Amino acid sequence: MQRLYRDEALVLRTHKLGEADRIIVMLTRHHGQARAVAKGVRRTTSRFGARLEPFSMIDVQLHAGRSLDVVTQVETIDPFSHPIATDYAMFTCAQTMAETAERLTEDDGDLGTGDSPQQFLLLYGALAALARRRHAPGLVLDSYLLRALALAGWAPSCFDCAICGAPGPHTAFHVQAGGAVCESCRPAGSVTVDPGAMALMGALLSGDWRLADASTTRDRAQASGLVSAYTTWHLERRLRSLALVERA
Image (cartoon, rainbow, N blue to C red; front, side, top):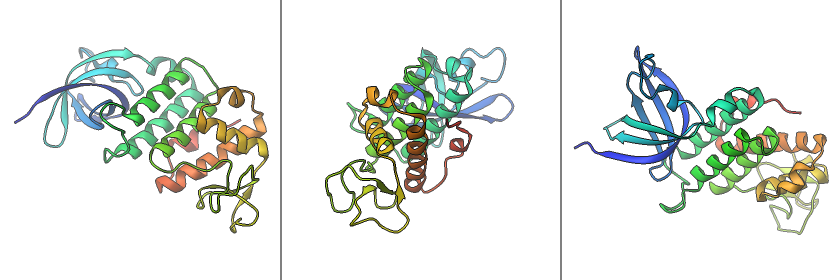
């Protein structure tokens, strides 16, 4: 027997279905990742087509089905899609975050408890920071990626040695080892990292925006490269959107 349920959701992705419908991929606050058909939304007469754009925060009612749910009602809570879509840097960063969230929650894993759905709240905060231009888009993206991976159990070490725990700071980073490594443990393939870039990664992971906003272009570029490599390694595939992100 089918049932109705209602939840807050962030639209991750949409794609066409038939002549007038769309499949909407959403991350909900309490029900994990949901895939639903929005019937007739590509018609100009649709009641809620514009409310189901990627990156929008919505209040949605869904009719649960066997394979795909059906959208029956939707109201906009925060229309992040409009300001993000008008800026290429913000758009590509948001696309990468949405792709990451879809990958991390496709099996409804790492969502936190029913009272504290961490992946949903993290993505909501990151999209809000982008849309309201609180920080540089690249910094918001890298902070989101590090923290989303941390929630999934893959937090990198940005200070102490990831292998032996020797107190940092250290100036080498090894993706497979889990982050910063000391000279004694340094595996082959480790990269030398400027102290400022390592400190920036730690700030992005912990949410120290005062330090992050004051970082140099060089440190941001180096940290972004490490974050991208670390994300790709743990997701076991390259994010398609990440290749489009403009880096300083």
